[in-house]
Length: 347
Ligand SMILES: *[C@@H]1O[C@H](CO)[C@@H](O)[C@H](O)[C@H]1NC(C)=O
Ligand SMILES: *[C@@H]1O[C@H](CO)[C@@H](O)[C@H](O)[C@H]1NC(C)=O
View 1 (cartoon, rainbow, N blue to C red):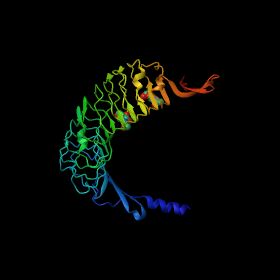
View 2 (view 1 turned 45 degrees about the vertical axis):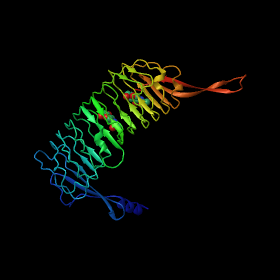
View 3 (view 1 turned 30 degrees about the vertical axis):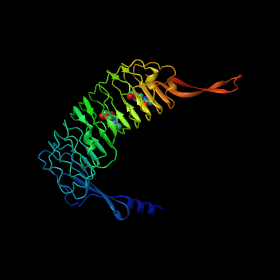
View 4 (view 1 turned 90 degrees about the vertical axis):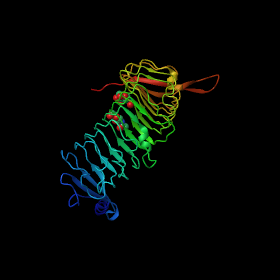
């Protein structure tokens, strides 16, 4: 049994660290082999912090799949810098914590298999409109840069219809735009910690996750999110800004399961109609907000809700209250109520 286990483990993965051809002196190269007779392999190359004066493209082994070039003081990214042998097979590339201010239009064009790109912690203010053209990206991290305006159409040129996850948190965004009617496969969009003053128009995106925390949104208007039919998770926490959510603001969010409105200190009251259309909502978080009580008959608008958090530590759950046997009607009426209790803090 033990022998069999070891044998199958050795079939699954074998890591080889030495004797890899063309591994740059400052990098660590690792080949991981998988499958029967090591038929698949991944080459990971870690070239973090090579120091100033590094000449790019850094030589890497042929067939490299994962390359980490973070913390290298790379300035503007030119067309030639990612065009060496071994780069065409990259699946993942980390360029975070550099000094990137610009990306030239064809800098990424050789990366035909690139799925994951980390450009976070740089000084980017804009991207060329076709810089992802032909790149099959599924995940791009653009957080902690200097974008003020962002046009999501840049993801319209990427190859393959695979959904993409985009992190634009911690920028200086005042506007996020997309062309009406254009198909973009963005499924996750993180816009937290920016300077947006209104909910951006994102109609037509197949979004499932949207984070608008830490912006300057003061008001949410009727139909602000319509029609994001696939959205499952929405978080809007604008602690010192958000003070009004208009009735029917969440109209069209028929798949929404989690709505996080926590820490909106200035938000004092919500009308029942605010919750109209949230047929799938399971979890509503109002903790740390100014909302101290919930409107009457709000449950009629929230057929699926399971949990509501309120105030400091008040947690409400939907419970079935057994109705009384009605002598005249001869039936038991079920009455659904929210039962709330303060959660004991254990020290
Ligand atoms: C979105 O960004 C915020 C701030 O950087 C972070 O805390 C959060 O985890 C991010 N969400 C996802 C799904 O990555
Ligand atoms: C509600 O939000 C608060 C603050 O963001 C968080 O600490 C808490 O875990 C959330 N509660 C639920 C039930 O998700």
